[in-house]
Image (cartoon, rainbow, N blue to C red):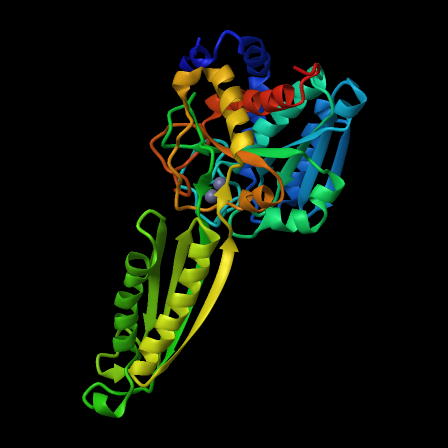
Length: 408
Ligand SMILES: [Zn+2]
Ligand SMILES: [Zn+2]
């Protein structure tokens, strides 16, 4: 018996054992997906392999090409009461890989140089296929389970794309759940909270237009490097002097480009700063966008230069709805016991495009512990196959308990 099996409660052992029996196939699928990483909206081989696996599972419907490379599988439960039969519950996995050179050398390492499943989306897909098979075999629920395989999570807004393509018009789920493997939690642990899980992510690009000149005659130029220095310092007052200390926000300017590293006496014409702003509340995001833009333009103006701010809102904050998060906590406790569920997980300043789905539908985003020495997006990362049956059991149990055969 593995340590993970002992984390599963006796109430959940039937569900878990059934998924554990199919573990070999899930591991094989996961490793196959790992070996063929594809970037956002290019997940064609991945999609085709998933369709093949889902057909073999006996799902009732497969819909391809939603949000370009996205796909949806539907598993019908039992008829139940007429009202119950119309209920739909959504589960989501993401499919894309990252532009990263893998430094692992196990047999299932990336077969495409420069691309890698370094965020474990290969594992998320395999867990959802595991849930599909379990649900199609057992059908101990009413209504239908809608399994969403989403493209382009890594900055491409694949969730937004699927919604724009009618995902929730065609499949009006009453709630949707997603989970992400989490190396900072040990295997067998589940973490979530009843509100903000991840921050809104904005991208900022600042172009400072000065006037180039000789380093010996700065008075004849407008030095954009000096102005960039003042801007870098000034924007750090935005959070500390504009945002309430009880709200969280981050401004990070992470890249600077100006002049030529070898040109010791040339004042350049232009300087460029790139960075990110993170926040949770829409009003904080709005305030930061306005103040940052005004501050950058004003600082540049004060030095006789001009600056343009290109401010892009990438992903909104990922906010669990309280009722559905509460339900996910109950299902998680049922599965692994209350001692293995952290239901007050602190939010992360990272971001996640499941946020778009949570803006459109109630639901929750959970973290599934996977342990391991390597963090996400690292060249030696790998998904921990040990947690595949557990993740699949969690997905399946959300459906069985969310769409129960008998009304309580
Ligand atoms: Zn990622
Ligand atoms: Zn990810």
